[in-house]
Image (tube, rainbow, N blue to C red; front, side):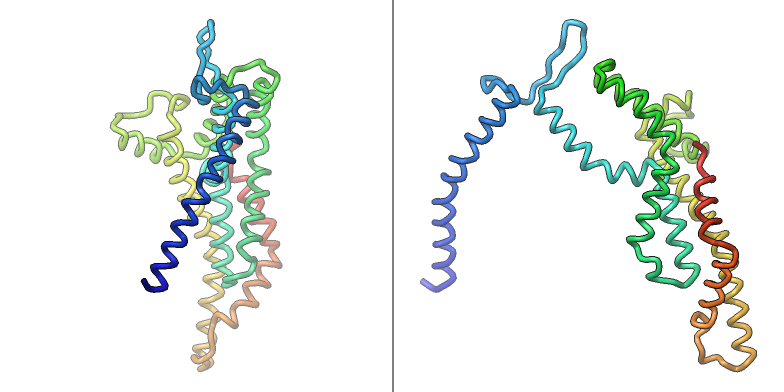
Length: 265
């Protein structure tokens, strides 16, 4: 028997020895956790009860599972259901137009986009808290009622930014003729239409930001060619002029102000 066979045999025997100990520790831990949550192990811990008034209540285990799932989906929802997408794309295009590949860094751009998103979305989040979260915490609304109320502010925000053509496109792809009522559009149709509209708007703003920097590049390249300095990189010469222009016109204030005012909240 060679050395590798001996190692496989020893690792296999080690697993056979260690697994009973792991189960001996894990099973009592699960039982204690379930009893602490009020679970009856005669029945499954993940249960749903229907009250006399028709409302459905979930066990603590299901509520914790739903909460953890929502926390894992929160970053994705932040990117695709808020103003974050448009802001971060415009800032990335602006950096590319200036010829600064790593300045500001990705961390700075994402941080700026995140806090600007919080600023833009503050009225929506405040309405969401007042209409859905606060009544649910005060036990004035059920879980289903809270979810329905939470969807209304987000739906209104996304509908205000979504083009009708994009919305009709995804409605037709779903197999329907047209939108009957915009307030009744399902999120499965609204979210992709919203993302498509945000991409279009972001690239339109990025195009307008690119034009003055492109003109500077063309002027510098023409001057260098007229002077016979064809071996000198135009990007290296035009970069200080683009930075100077951006600083003189207070470019960051104009860009951030335009982004913040471009959302209909």
